[in-house]
Amino acid sequence: MSQEFDLAILGAGPGGYVAAIRAAQLGMRVAIVEKEKLGGTCLHRGCIPSKALLRSAEVYATLKERDKYGIVAEGVGIDFGKMQTRKQGIVDQLHKGVQYLMEKSKITVFKGYGRVMGPSIFSPQAGAVRIENEAGEQEMIVPRFLLLATGSRPRTIPGLEIDKEYVLTADEALQLDTLPASMLIVGGGVIGIEWASMLSDLEVDVTVVEAAERILPQEDEEVSREMARLLKKRKVKVVTGAKLLAETLVRGQGGLTIQAETAGGVQRFHAEKMLVSVGRRANVENLGLEATEVKVDGGVIEVGPFYQTAEPHIYAIGDVIGGLQLAHVASHEGMIAVEHMAGLSPAPLDYTKVPRCTYSRPEVAGIGLTEAEARRQGYEVKTGRFSFKALGKALVYGENDGFVKLVADARTDDLLGVHMIGPHVTELISEAGLARVLDATPWEIAHTIHPHPTLSEAMGEAALAVDGSAIQS
Image (cartoon, rainbow, N blue to C red; front, side, top):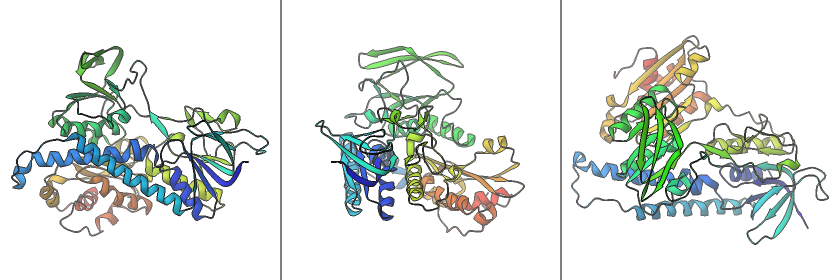
């Protein structure tokens, strides 16, 4: 016998489980299907474990500079095994928290692989789900609505097959038992730069090879340049505008070599291991979508503004629809989709109001249009910039590299974007997020009183600088 639900969700990552909780709040009977663990990639192989290791690396980097803080200590070193144990403890604790939330919300959890069925005796419309567990046992559930939240996996490069010994993705790197002596990172986006920062702090010899003309190409150009400068200052080798020649890869004898075409000619790289971080690919295969009207284009599922597919009762959210592949985006998309199913009137998500974060040292955060994007869109732009070097709290922290930059429309004074690189800016960006939601102007931000001494003063000073009124510079 098949079980009936108001909503079934395929995938229990931050998009799926948040949507499940919201649906339960709205009185729906909810089932969630997950083939691995509740929490998805973000909790088990992404956001949380990588940030735990980044924190350990940050602490070690601080301890190496203990003399300047007046701290005397002997025998400071790295126990990578303990770092991994701490990381796993955090993941396990949060996993238990998600399990508790499912129980509290009376959400039925099916462990297994879910596949969408076409119209059948179980349902006159596509959307019934056949679930197969590890033992090969099958059962059927029939929902009124179906939400696809199957996430993504690391993208690979033809010719650079992942062997888990020499060539890794972040999934394998998170499970390393020991630190390599050297790492070649292919890709200078968010994941690549986070790993470059972490590994260099842990005394690994790091080289970053990026195909674009700059690292962090989605961020403001000034932010990219500053990050490149600071990484090079920490002895990280950064090579941009590089076309990797996969056919030249040679593995073995404790390392690998590969060549790349660069502006200066063909360069040869050698490292103990290679980390491929060139984005993520949506999990759209083997879902049974061919039995439905759901359209897949460019490797992602097509949806409307409320995440409906071409089958009105089937919705899709998160990495599987492309766009901004961020945990907090998937969560908000899930809530909007569920509220739309329930007949409410949610506002469509404005992706220009979504903050982006890179948890390197220093951190990077941004929201809205970069200066270059604003100019390309025809805006007459004015900007304000304030350096952390002039900020008392940054000097107290011992982290005063970086700046805050505001981009505004010179004609209307509208805030178009905010871009940051510096200490704890992944926390500071939320003020910019609120400003974007409220359509605040730089003048309004400047006249918000920022307590002294705090890092948030940089936001207020940058806002004053938009009109040439900065006090501290």
